[in-house]
Image (cartoon, rainbow, N blue to C red; front, side, top):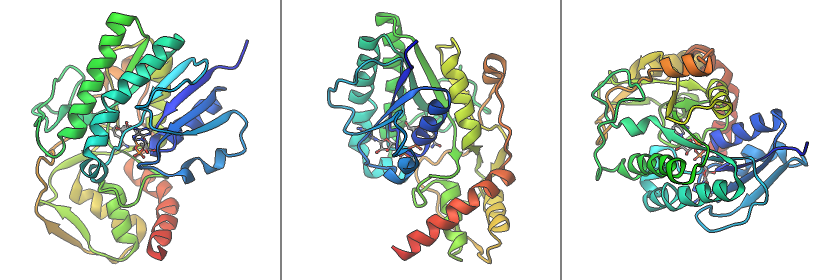
Length: 317
Ligand SMILES: NC(=O)c1ccc[n+]([C@@H]2O[C@H](COP(=O)([O-])OP(=O)(O)OC[C@H]3O[C@@H](n4cnc5c(N)ncnc54)[C@H](O)[C@@H]3O)[C@@H](O)[C@H]2O)c1
């Protein structure tokens, strides 16, 4: 039997690069298609000499021939608030034209398809924790809408390709994930705190820090994604860690794990900052036999060396 081949759009990004590693370990040949708007070539540097790995630098919104494929994983999109606010139009484009292009590729090849969706589909949720059946509370024109609505649209297109073209689709709703290969200064809670703590700067907490977040370590997230890819579930599935922390608690944990002498400073809440976010993972537990294994203290410890090196490199830059 010939080797299975997967296309990973956004395959040099934070999650995309970890997914490439996991697919190679599963025996796939992998093509990573990336435009390097965000993420970094460094994330896949360790795969440079792996003959089963191919890197294609291109905008996935443009038509392309990829050869035979068994799976298309559509992970391309700016993902951090700093990136998607800066690249608002690009975010809307990759979440619309890019999603159509990735689905067309899957349809032509008869490949399975997975779309990387997000907890942002729930917006500032009125239901807590959020089950997949909750339709969300999203401001359609606010600063975050370029991302939230692009992802909601992508889910709609994915569901429509399944209905109309019988493409074999999966939708993963990814909740806040952290770990090695994250961009350090991308506005997300953990890299922000790590950057500040490792430089001895005060950690910036927005509002009074009582807003809650849940953080999933990257190995757990990728395990859930791979299990969903192998399953027959076509409706969205939440994959995230339901352990909930206030942003203030998280800041204190980062200070403890880094051994930093930094203090905490408070600034005004940005517009549309969600007050609570926590996945209901009943479905992932039941369908995939999945649940996270790495708690926040361990995950921070496992990430520390990466963040320390990145902070050093960033300080030198
Ligand atoms: N990291 C998280 O916590 C998280 C949470 C929810 C959802 N997600 C989703 O997971 C996916 C990956 O996120 P990430 O954290 O790895 O982001 P990332 O920014 O690290 O990687 C995204 C990659 O996509 C590429 N890209 C963007 N537009 C492109 C285009 N038009 N053509 C080709 N490549 C393009 C970027 O250059 C980058 O390499 C995204 O779809 C994101 O929305 C991530």
